[in-house]
Image 1 (cartoon, rainbow, N blue to C red):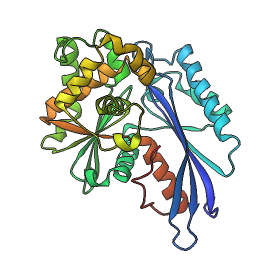
Image 2: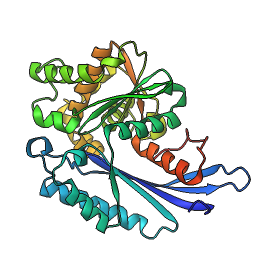
Image 3: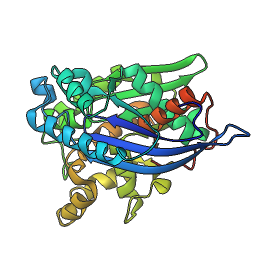
Image 4: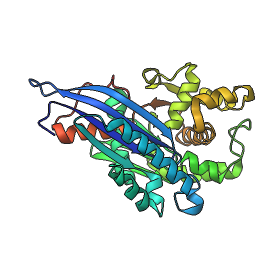
Length: 326
C-alpha cells in the first residue's frame, strides 16, 4: 500500500448519535512525496446507537439494526472502489454497551474491523483534526468534543495533550431530562443545570484561564448552521464560525418557534430533538469558563483519523489540509 501512488482511504466514525464515513482519493507526487488529497464521498447517518443505553446498558435491537443498515450502505459505496484502505473507530456507545462485541462481530462480517477508542485516543484524533483544519486556533485554545454520549476537553500542551472526559452527551442528557427543551429559558431546570454543572466542573477544572474554546461535534456545527442563516450546509462557512452567548440563546429560541419545526426537522433530521441538550451543555461550559463565545470546528475525529492513516502509510504529514472538507 505504501508504494501505491494513488489509492482511496475510507474512514468511519461510529458515534453514539451519528455514523459518518468519508472517502478521500490520495495521489502522491513522485518528486515531493506530498499527497494530493481529493474528497470523494462524505456520508452521515443519524443512527442513535446509544438510544436508551444509559438505562439498559445495551444497544437495543432497533439501534443495532439501524447501525447495521448504515454500515451496509457504507459497504455498498466503497465496495467497487479500487485500492481502498479502510479504518473504522467506535466511541462512547461501543465503549459502554454490554453487547458491543456482538455489534463488532456483525460489522466484521460486512468487512469493517472496528477499533473502539479510549477517551484519550478519541481526544488525540480530535485534536489532530482541529490542528489540520484550524491551525491558527490550535495553540492556546481548549478543544471541546461534544458528542451524543460523552464530552472530552483537550488542551494542547508543550509536553502533549491534557485530556479530561465525562459521560455527558446530548443523547444521554436528553434521556435523563426529557423536559429540557425550548421555549423554556436556558436557565430553567435546576436539576438538569445542577447535574451539568457538577459534571462539567469535574471534567474541565484544568481549563481555568483558557482564552479560547473550539467546539467540535454535531451540536456545535448544527448551532453554527442555524445561526449563520445559510439555506444549505456549507462546511467552508461553518469552519471557524464564532458563536457568542447571545447567538447561542437566539438559536435556543429559534428551536421553540413552532412554525419552523417542520423546516428544521427537514434540515436537522432526528438531531433536532437532542440539539437543545447540546446547547444546554455548551451554554453551561461558557458560563463555567467565563468565556463570551466559542469557535466551531467542522473537523474533528473523522478528519484526524484520516490524517493519522496518511501519516502511518505514507510516512508524511500532509501540509495542505485547511481547504479539505469532509
